[in-house]
Length: 84
Image 1 (cartoon, rainbow, N blue to C red):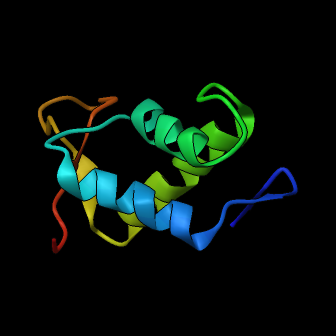
Image 2: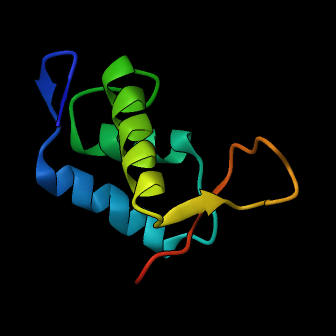
C-alpha cells in the first residue's frame, strides 16, 4: 500500500493485523505506533496515521473488526471479530 508516495510493505501491514488480533481492543493510534516502529517515522506522522486508517477501513469492510462498544454511535476503540 502506498501512502503519500511511500510504500508500506506487506510485512508491516501483516504486523499491524497481528496486533489487531492479539489485543482485546485497539485504536488507530496504536496501529499507527506499530507502523511507525517498523518504519522511519513517528506515530503522528501522516504516513503512519493514514496507513493505520486504511488498514482499519480494509478490515472493517472485510468484516474482521467492529467498534468495541456497539452502544455508542462513534467509538475510537475497535475489536477483532474475524478469524484468528
